[in-house]
Image (tube, rainbow, N blue to C red; front, top):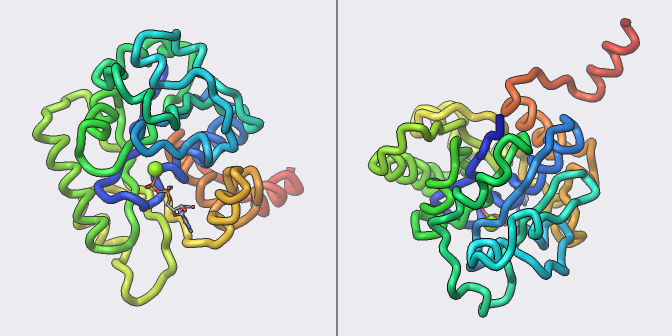
Length: 254
Ligand SMILES: Nc1ncnc2c1ncn2[C@@H]1O[C@H](COP(=O)(O)OP(=O)(O)O)[C@@H](O)[C@H]1O
Ligand SMILES: [Mg+2]
């Protein structure tokens, strides 16, 4: 069964694209799941840049305009994840119908395990189109009240849309520094009524990996944020994650 997961947040800059890039790479390379990541933030698209994908003659824009089949817009990454980028050209924004996103994605149903949708922030047209196209929603927040409150607002809007089939998966708590002024995980879970599936530390290496246009899980697979992304992958698959050190111990005991 294909799982379509929308990665959303109320606030911009909280790490949605970083989560999609790294979770996609982890599901494909670490867990061997056939995974496609889609840039649904068509007005300010960044997913291609995160993945080092700069030349993309066919994009989601072309698919949504009905000019190309979705298969023509798939690009394979070294991690085995496949990317459907959005166009960086402003002219490609006209004439495409985002409300048809789900119907185009249907061509992938039954053929891939995961489709991760990288949403635009907020609750505008692009973000709502992503939510409508999703089966499940993964929220990304930072440990600050503004960001957590925006998740609440997102949840309220989703409730009002009355999308009965849509299930909220949980939260990714990103950019955690464990400083006193940050909200505690338990308080965020209480406030949003969502479980935290993974906590990603704030780490300069994530910015370096963006500069090198490679997800941190590929560039520094043993760095703390990479381990956290692997735990997120395991949580989504409802599997237990054994850290590399622990796996070595298990192999030795066998
Ligand atoms: N855990 C983190 N530690 C440090 N920098 C991060 C972390 N997560 C994301 N970033 C950086 O923050 C910026 C915004 O992240 P991005 O994924 O583009 O957010 P969004 O898609 O929600 O707008 C990027 O420069 C990214 O590299
Ligand atoms: Mg983004």
